Length: 149
Ligand code: RB5
Image (cartoon, rainbow, N blue to C red; front, top):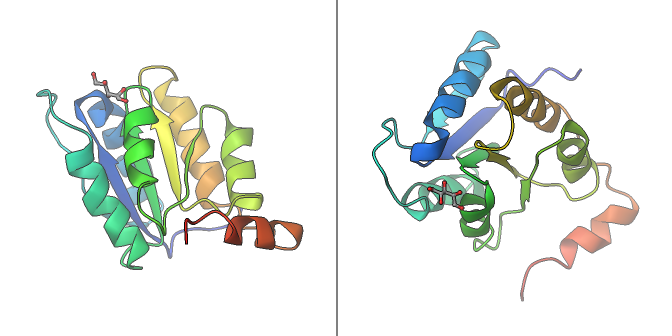
């Protein structure tokens, strides 16, 4: 597995994603990854766009290499990230989906559905996402067509 300790990773979450976020942050810290926490740290009900936009901006501006976006379904927070032209957020509930999102789509944010997968599975997905490179080649032109000009 590719070493990703030199990455700066942004993470954002709403109230549904706090527990998963804390677990992922702990695991990333153990690996020596630099983390920027844009999420809420309480389980008080909140609105995921308030946390997704600042993280998406940081990834777009290159302040973070990659992003992790966590909410109950992973949908709202991924949808919000994807409103940013420079973001390709991939909602991932299986390791293989996350891996292919990197290899084929050059995704730069992984969306995690906290209420539908185990904490351990969430970590496996993040690990696969961060350690997989974009394949380029035939996928290059396709990814270049994603943004609305
Ligand atoms: C919060 O209850 C929930 O709606 C949110 O975490 C997310 O699933 C939205 O897409």
